[in-house]
Image: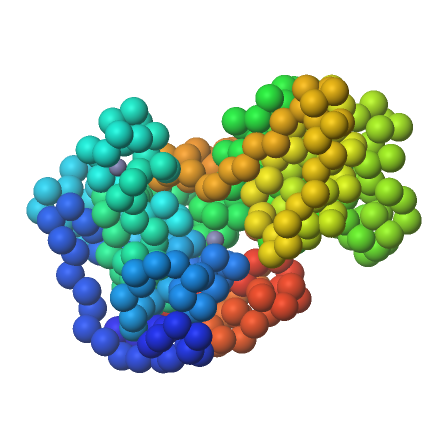
Length: 336
Ligand SMILES: [Zn+2]
Ligand SMILES: [Zn+2]
């Protein structure tokens, strides 16, 4: 099969031909139709995670069709359309697993980090890492949804915000453009925050009720004039922007952080204490969460805006993503 691998930390992508992998007894093999290109893939490229075995195939936004089912796998069949997200499986026996908290498994796997990912024509994945893709979604649309859709979906549905509450999506990029659509469909009064007038029409197209141009006004001040935000979901990894927009929370409001900035974030803790506000960090979710996100997006007709690339153009797709030029998610199509 054709695959893209990283041969050592810090190396560029390398195109290789290698044997099609066979699944273990508790795994399936997937003919990869689409794989999203994500900032998380830089972890493998840069070696920013301990114990990665190189060479290694990146990609944790997989959508494709099961073509071999391991001998001990139940409930999944050849031909099923499935997604595989960042959370690539769990041990079922550690303490968090015993409590059903699979995302915090002490021995958990990460797709494209601890086992080979989706920058290839085929991949294998543990059965517990599979999310069923609804018929309404094709593979290129589904692939980014298991990461850039799952994270805002799962964090917002777990937040204290209820129907009609003021929810802010800071940043309209790969994750933010999903966040605006999802927040709107969840019934929140949705405020999109970005920079420049160009994002304004896009924000309304995505369903936002309000748009704040951070170049024109201080978002925190504008939010306070609207009564304050119940939840602010920060999708842009900008320490200064995260710290300053926290001033827009209302009493009991929550700053929901899903993007990690390189610099430390300064938060106005006296304001947090005085108004009993909170900061909640969030990572993606397990496979059933991913399936919930897929089903929610299918139900509401929500799709990512994507650029598609053949596998041969993986480096260009990654570059478009990492320089922030992609509109808004890059998706590889290894099956073509
Ligand atoms: Zn991702
Ligand atoms: Zn575990």
